[in-house]
Image (cartoon, rainbow, N blue to C red):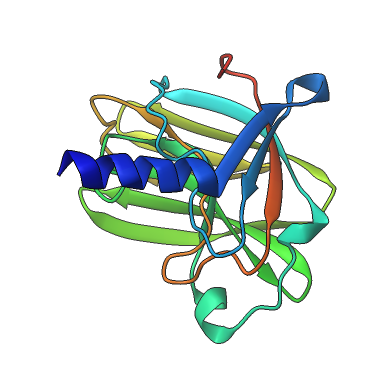
Length: 184
């Protein structure tokens, strides 16, 4: 079991990279044929994260019916199991534009919805906040408030991820600047 875990960690480390760039943006790269980018770092988050993001032009891809129906994940927070309780901003490419939406698991049940579109190279903003029994997700100036959610007992960052079933059709680069706290 330890050998399998070690091999998995090596594969994940080879599949993604993160480095600092100007203006506190970090570069997240998902390599062709992979899903993950820095998804295995367990970094504790608080219940209110704010960030800016930029998708590079290599995030525009020819969408198939299967790829179009699912959400890639930009950024978010979850408990230790993101298919149990998590809140993320999702994205997909439709007609040459990047479509943004909310993507949430509450007690193992998934829900999602459209919020906005953005062009490659354009800076966007996001916020995910748990408050009482409400979850607020913001993309640019658009808000969704989900009532009756329960804040996970421990929150961890969720980093860029491509797909569900599909893997990244090419190398993709996403820039994220976290305003909530410093992530090394």
